[in-house]
Image (cartoon, rainbow over all chains, first blue to last red; front, side):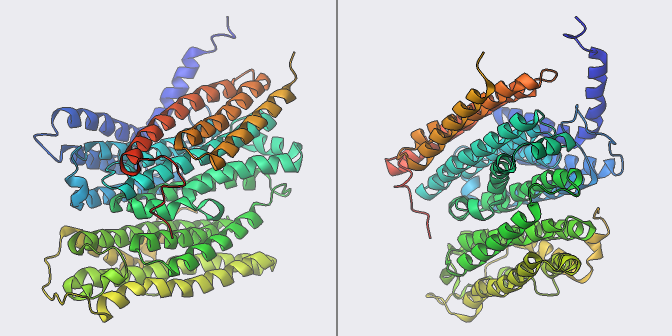
Length: 499
Length: 101
């Protein structure tokens, strides 16, 4: 009897004790449930009720995360399912910020707002995806990892296919769903192999010891399969095919969200996964993550940046550039020490800001001037002077030229890899440094195509009337100011970073 | 008593069949069936190897979650395939290629 019903009161108090640390997630769930009800009953009378509800939920979650502050649990919660730490808190704040910017983008997107089904469901799906991303940054159990990744994936398929207003949007969603389904199935098989080899689902020392005891080929296969699943979220090189097509086809607000939110959640998950092995397997390396990640980072930077040069479609170009940035951030993962952490966090935050701003402006120009290609931007600088001035600053930041946040981010990552090279004199860190420098120069070519066309070439129709700036441009302007401020005073971010 | 290796072999075979189907099928629904094969290969592993995890039965619980999530994923994918059919009048992933370099 005792074996069948173990200490129920103990179990119960262990579960309820953990709830205290899950308040941000509970706020998201509450906003989601409320949003569904509001969408059913009140959306006809108050068009933006669900939007306000979602924004309130995200704001509450961010506030609760901030308010919790240093009140962090010492042990994993819910029987080793999730672990809330300083790292996950930083990631969560980034997710909530990105989601709020996504709401702003949706609010100003005409195609979404005029959609017959309304936008209520989109906001509700967003809340669930953000919930999944929160859990991705906290999970320390493979069941939790798989659950949260699937939550984010299934929600993202729906977001991409939400309008399906034309054939391209439908195509983007089917490509995403099929490729994503295959990748998550591959990851699931990898997880099942890890479980078979080690008998545990907890990402911890027992798992690493268990993987050491099986032949290295078997454990390497299992780990590679899991990495393929995480890599799908990150879109690093062997599994990046989907991202240009999906980013081009999806509605621009969704593209902006996908290229930041789930991608950063993928970084959070990769961090947890790698930390497990770095902490537990100190000394004996049976699977060389450093070299694997280095090679992936180099390939990702090369493929992303070189492919971007040939693109004319702005969203496709930004998609390839975001692949390039993924490779760059992966460089920070090679040295998982004090400097590497800080560099990675700084870059992730700045990347989220500048990518959101770039897509905001692309969306703005797409709606006002119906231009989606670099050549179509010809002469538009005179029509939207403020928008394109901001665009130039954001692109400079994406390239990594001072005085912008992007420069500081690249500098921090370079110096962490340089420290790595100084300590070991190994070939791969040096190769990464060279690739990073060369691809940064390459990125200048395609980023500067936008201002080149907008300012220096004249368009077909000589329109010189300046259009009134929308609020979207002012939001992008605010982000630009933040990027410049961070570029001049990096301590604005670094003072709050863990590590 | 069936030895544990047999489960591993069957699941590996299922996984490979599924992966082959994903790469070769010319019909989006058959690709989905391939994905389903791969998920079920993992489920077999989980259930078989939870024999060594009698205290927590993590594998069996995971198998239940995997089945439910697979159903959710397929439901979404089928809805998306319907949408695609509306525009292309085909669900051959090879012929749906307006977006490319």
